[in-house]
Amino acid sequence: MDSKDDRHMPKKTVAFKILYLAVVSLIVLSLAFSLTACELFNIDSSSTDTTTDTVDITGLDIKFNMVEHPVAPNSAIVDVVEAIHSSVVEITVTSYNTNSSGSGVIVSSDATYSYILTCYHVVEYYSRNSIKVTLTDDSKYTASYIGGNSAEDIALLRIKAGNLNVAAIRNVTETPVKLGEDVIVIGNPLGTLGGTVTRGIIGGLAREIVVGNYSMTVLQTDASINSGNSGGGMFDANGLLIGIINAKSAATNTEGLGFAIPIEIAMSTVSSFLKS
Image (cartoon, rainbow, N blue to C red):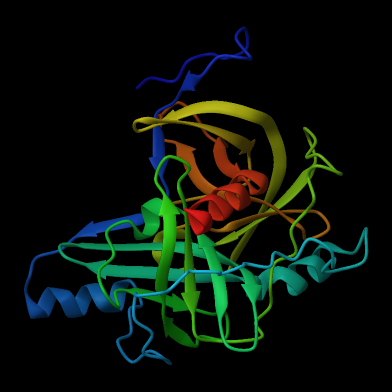
């Protein structure tokens, strides 16, 4: 679908040429090519744990960090990045005839397990034990799929690793996101550059865009994002998580048009499928 000028229709849905930002590669079912793909996407079968994809979510209550700030207000950008960098992970999925790479954000962690928010399209083609998570210290885990929602493009994973660095989430009800404020994006562009940090501003609030068959309400940013950034975090200048990167405009005549699922929508989506 072609991009359309939304300057005169702020309340209407705007259709963009949108590129989901997972890196996807069709593969041939041969050992030689599979080994090449595993190397390209950093997929390692010798994971730290042997978690399966079956998770009993009965009574599961995810505790989001809505209180503790990662840094003092107005800290230097290098201090903010240092505090939040390890809360973003690399995700790779090998399943059937498709390899994909993306990003994720650790949003909850106890003594045994950690929970990772990502985009549904990053992991939608998973099979048992096919989702691999790599932390910033290069440790690797097999992730369990807890649940997801394709319409909101949100999924939740779990790894058997405790007491990890958890992203602090901004209470946007008390402090709404504002047009023009600085943002930091961390993710895994191209599926090979995990932990990449870029910076920009909020270029649009509550944009209504159409991705595939779904209408989504998203935040717009001009921060540099590329394939593989899907599921990564968009943080404010104080290191608080405000969005999950999920798409960019794919039109050849556009640049600096990236989009993120607002964190309040992501959290609401998680709460909904945990209760269903």
